Structure formats: C-alpha cells, structure tokens
Length: 243
Image 1 (spheres, rainbow, N blue to C red):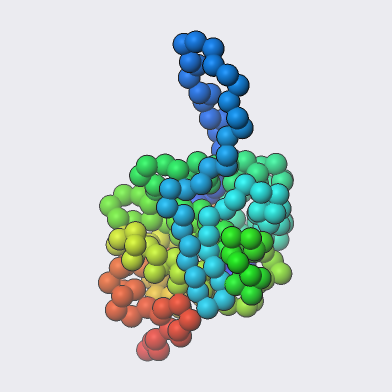
Image 2 (image 1 turned 60 degrees about the horizontal axis):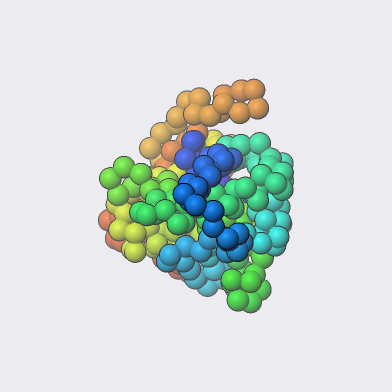
C-alpha cells in the first residue's frame, strides 16, 4: 500500500497491478451471424460505492477522463517511487482499467480496484478520480490493501480516510478477517497512516521486489477483524489514544 502524502504500495505481485495479458478471443459460431453491435463497457454486477466525509470510492469507468486520471497517478515518477512498478504510459493505464473491469465481472469477485473521488467535485460517477484503492482477496478471509493518490492531493488526510473506508468495507460487507499491506521502508507517511488505523507491524521482508535493477525490502503490516471492531478508528473519527 502506498498512502498519502505518498502513495501506498500494493504488495508484490498482487497489489503490483501487472499489465493485463491479452484475453482469448470469443468462440466462433458454427454458422455466419450478422455483424454484432459494439459491446457496451463492462459494468460490475454489483457496483461498489463507498462514501466518507470527503471522499467517494467507486468503480472505474473506461472513459478518457478516468484513463487520464489514472495516468496522472501511475505516470508520475514521484508518485510511482513507492509503487511496485515503473511509471506507466497512458496506453498501459487504459489497459489497466480494462483489466479492472474484467476483474469486477468475475464470479466470484476477488479483486477490487476502485477509483477515489472528491465529494466536493459533485456526483462521484462523473467526478475525476484523484487516486485508486486496491483490495485483493486471497487465502482464508484475507486480503491485501493498497492505494495511490495524485501528488497534488498529498498531505490532506485522504489516505487515512481511504484506509478507514477500505477497512469498513473489508470487515463489513466482504466479511474478511485479516487485511495486510506492504510499504517501502522509506515511505514513513504510509507507515503512519497504517499505524493510526490500527495496523500492526509484522516485520521486514527482505528483497521483496526487484525493480530498477536492484532489490527492495518492504515492511508488512496487518489488521484483524476484531482489532478493527474493538479499537480502530472509523471514518471521520480520530484514532484511540495509545499508551
């Protein structure tokens, strides 16, 4: 996860948001059929909408606005500094959104890659995203957590609000028991956000990622369902005092 003022680092390889592989073509009909109409963009069967005091989190749309918004995050070298991949070009970001929509259509759905928008900019479905949230389900009621924010939105507390919304969603509707996130050891802002949300440092993973010609370590944090319900802060609230 790569929080805010700097983005949260999704884990490798799952929050690593890999470039999508080509999808196999459709099976041919046994007899010629009329030319089909262009397919409508994929829409998740049950679209996700999470709302906090200042932010709304929704599904991505394959529109020029959403592609440009994702590119503003993933294409920025400073933002990508703590992400598990090199800066991405606009075409790759467009492919990523196609992948996100395919993942949203999967049954059962195991990956949630969602757009983060500002409520102040109006109806979230039409607001330009300022970042993204990723939740990837795996194992027994567990998931990784990751997010990234556009650089000009850092330092405003949005990462904490995203984290709280993600925890409410994961431990509520998704019925998960454990969330975990990995953070570059130099990304102290992300570590603070996780700690304030109640995540516990599990340890340092050595040489977790090979990128840019060298190996990178990662801190791994986790939060359990009962810890969130018993002591962690909720959206818009302050974290409990810790001794």
